[in-house]
Length: 118
Image (cartoon, rainbow, N blue to C red; front, side, top):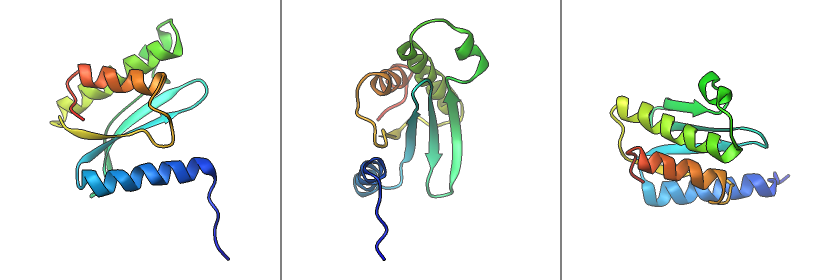
């Protein structure tokens, strides 16, 4: 029996396959977006380790007031700062199944502005 995937899972798989094909071996900045929060982590797929992460659920971001897009911008800045502290400066951006728009775009632009290259 063939396993069927949800449209969400198909889009995420398609994005990751493209990253593997063209990115080959680079670290991956993966984004997860829910209705209220957003999180990002830098993953080394070769060793299966998360090198840096940030989430809008963290106390300092949660305490700040503003829109969800503002929280996404903060998460992008923090994950980039933590990555640079670990010696990571170049990554591939894995948007998963999310459109590069709104909070996902704000996170990416903030990470770029903070020094990550992708």
